[in-house]
Every structure is written in structure tokens, then in C-alpha cells.
Length: 132
Image 1 (spheres, one colour):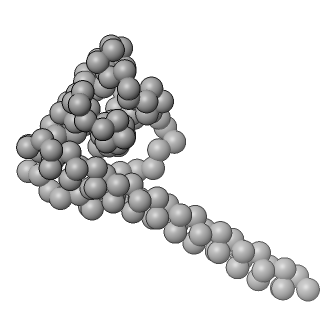
Image 2 (cartoon, rainbow, N blue to C red; image 1 turned 60 degrees about the vertical axis):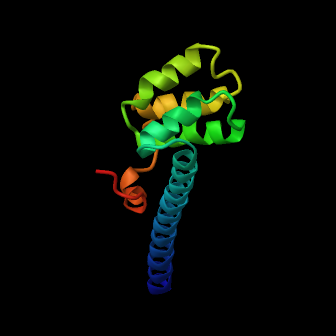
Image 3 (cartoon, rainbow, N blue to C red; image 1 turned 45 degrees about the horizontal axis):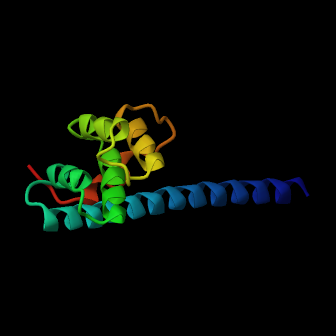
């Protein structure tokens, strides 16, 4: 009887650990593919490297609001210090009036390293093209 209980407990624990690892990996894949898509969209409209194109898209007043929100989110995930002053001025000023305030707050928390519960970037960094 105890042997069956121990075997079931071990199997259940192993299954739970494998499920959590699979969820973490899928989260990384989703973030990486979204960043790649949003970066390509920004770079198709604004020439330059990934971060510069995303910053230009955030500052573009005539661009689609959904694309601007995606660019804000992507800048927060990329954790590049060049994006911090842009997003702070966007949060404080009116030139980004249509950008979702919640998205800006989340991106700023990431850039300021205030968000302690975010997944590690090593799960998705490998998916982005290298820009040396």
C-alpha cells in the first residue's frame, strides 16, 4: 500500500515539474516570437536597429495605436536602457496620449528592474536576430 502511494506521489511530482517547465518554455517562445514580429514591423517602417526603430514607432503620432502599444511592450521586454527616457517622457507627457497607460507602466517597471516576477530573457533572446 505505502509503495503504491510513494510511486504515485513521485509520478505526480515529476509530472508537475515537467508541466511547469513546459509552460515556462512556451512562455519564452511566445514572448520571443512576438518581439521578433513587433521588431520587424517597426523596422519595416523606420530604418535602423531594433531598439531605434521601436522608439521611432512609439514616437510616431500618425502610426496605428496597436503598433505603438506593441512597440512599448517590446521595449520593456528588451530591457535596453536607451528606451527608459523615451518611455518616461511618454508616460509623463501628452505626446503619447493614445498609448495605453498600463502598457507603459509595465514596460517602465521592466526597464527600472522593479518587476521581480518576470521570466528570464534567456528563454527568448536566442530567437531575435543578432544586431552587433
